[in-house]
Image (cartoon, rainbow, N blue to C red; front, side):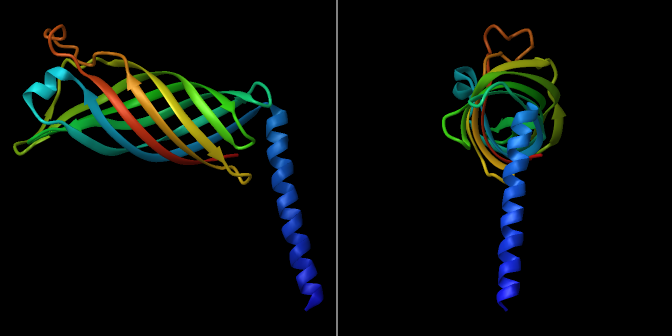
Length: 198
């Protein structure tokens, strides 16, 4: 019985030591790769639309890949490639805007496993649909490119599993129609993510 207990303790210690070594090695190598997925809570920011109809949040998902380029013990550069479901819910319709987003984040570690993340983002619209009682309608004349800024927090476990909370503020008027001077709306998205670095 003692031998079995000692063997379990030894294996557990070996596993933990391997994890710690693997994490430090990844930092020494200068780059880590990973993937993540999570929940989007999105809306449009627009005084023009608010005057015409009630706007409520749309919940959707995001999923994609990321890399962390180690600059120093405290600082990293983190580019990401994400699918992101955005838009809002109106009185009788749901506006579904789907993007491929490329955040380019500066990551600063305020503690060993806790980081602040901030940086610009460019999004590419892949579909824009209005879903109502009569069915789906493709929304024409929406801006193909959406620029924004991100601010968030991250927490990474020694195992490589990490958690993120982030807010994305759109800076581009995504109405690309002729009335874009008088009807303006931008993206506003909260994201909660879980992922894995390897």
